[in-house]
Length: 120
Image (cartoon, rainbow, N blue to C red; front, side, top):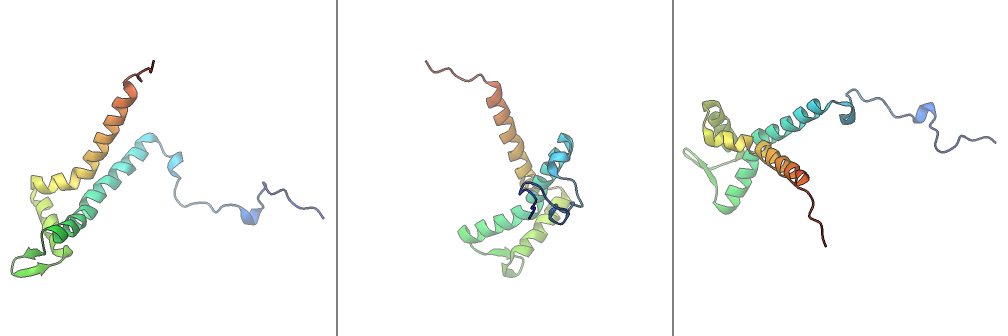
């Protein structure tokens, strides 16, 4: 009985094609834009909820106008209004993950440029 070697894949075992390109096939610019977009999305969509969680844990409940126990969505709404008005504090929070990413990459690039110390 003839069998196919285990390294070969039959047509039914072939990987299905993805509707989007893999990250490795994208150009460096495209990959960098994806990473920067993900960092910016994290700053805009995730950071307000992390701030709410930390603030409610250590500072107490978030108050919003007459509501002494407003939830995370009230904070998120205030955050979006602050971004729309151009408040620098809200934009620092929104751009924080992107700035942290740039600082880490700059530090790593600096470490690569500095010659390694030779141990004697």
